[in-house]
Length: 445
Image 1 (cartoon, rainbow, N blue to C red):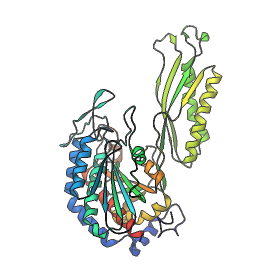
Image 2 (cartoon, rainbow, N blue to C red):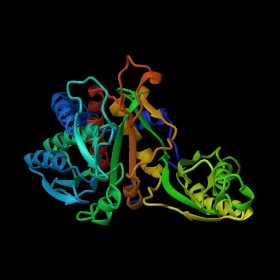
Image 3 (cartoon, helix red, strand yellow):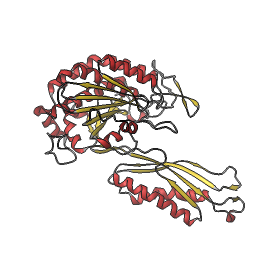
Image 4 (spheres, rainbow, N blue to C red):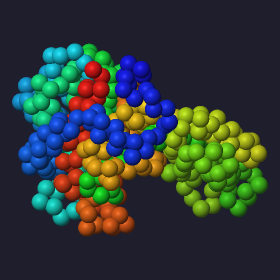
């Protein structure tokens, strides 16, 4: 960390006041001339960014199936004269900008996949696309804003390429597939990209990413030291009993009543065993299946659910407590129970390195304005950007996409058919990605 953060080691607290940030920015570390230039270039390129976003929104593709999306991105990056590699983690695209001067390697990441959601917005660039999921044709929509993420990174790639002479080191542009999770029986996303060496050759020193937010005002950016998004750990519980006629329950070992007690008891792991004043945690059962008739107590019940945690200690406790609770209740009911944890995938905590967060706060303030930089609470959603952060220091931010004339209560949620973000929110994202790169490179002199 000393090598990565040479200018800010004197800041020991995990957080830094925006007053202090403003003083730091005024000291010249935020590179006012560069930022003004970036702002003008972002103004100029904004119509192109919007055009890219509209094309990508109209042509979404599901996870690990982003073939045409990858071709579109690849063609653009090659047109900038960048060194481009394709086919990483199936459809991933990576481009390298080499300044020709010594310095750090900064990675910038955008995700590419859409979701199996039918769009219900009346937009000129509305998605009517279809895709195949588990053998079935489904509607596809960019219902989480990945179209804007790609467009913003394409814009940043253009500006940084045009400013190549002012860079030190290299920039690696990562367009990642399958952030929403690979199809059944497949692997994908950031985890696979890391396994395939996306952070190597050249070795990446730091990575930045951002997510558009449908309930944050356009022009604002939200950040947090430490855990900003939760770890996600899906699990399955199989409860085995003894089948009997529903009229004679004493002849059974009832897996349904056992499962009901397990579901209720799992909530006490959070309410009675996790120190929730530090960070939130969630245990949710999302599916339960057992039996097929009203008058038959079945042999077996299967449940699947998800765990969300925001610190390592809570996550480790969940891994110990859930099997303990399940086994104890099953034993008390004369049933047997098996816990599969994690089930099929697992994302770590999206964790913003506190020292690096201190370092980049002046960049956020200089780019967005002090009044638009919000120290935010964590959310219990998850992001596989966390796999990059497990390997190297990284920062993940939320950028506003909600129109100013829409209330937060009326803004549509992510992953819904009504999801909407305004084009005007992308300019700030382009500037942030660009300025974070420039300022980090300059800090590493």
